[in-house]
Image 1: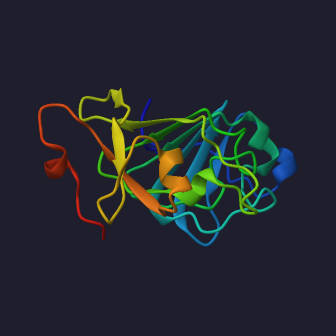
Image 2: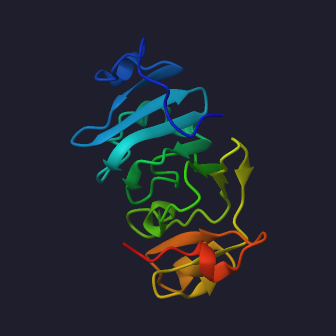
Length: 178
């Protein structure tokens, strides 16, 4: 898997949702984020935020029930509320971020009305060698450490960063919040 989109060559813009098929994509309206849906995998790439999306406004809305994996490229810095819930994906079973230093906005795991939290997604980060790694913990901007992103949501955190415990100290891995 590639954490970003290699390009949109040959991929049609999905302006008419009735014409969507299993291999489509385009640019999310009012953003610099591109999307590509291939089978059950939704790739988001580009730069900046996706903006606020709903089941009606997401360009892949006719295929929401198919999406079980969301791959977020390194340049994507903001995600719509509910992106990983049944509002905008199946809900996603797997979420992959292209950067191990990404700040993860937790409202992407909570539906817009707050009635659903996707606490089942496996959240992975792409390593320099093209493999994927799950964090051992999460930290928020205040330095609080959580065992899971669900625990961070329940504690009221708005964004978390992954912590990987290998050979370096946790404090060295945590970047300061922007």
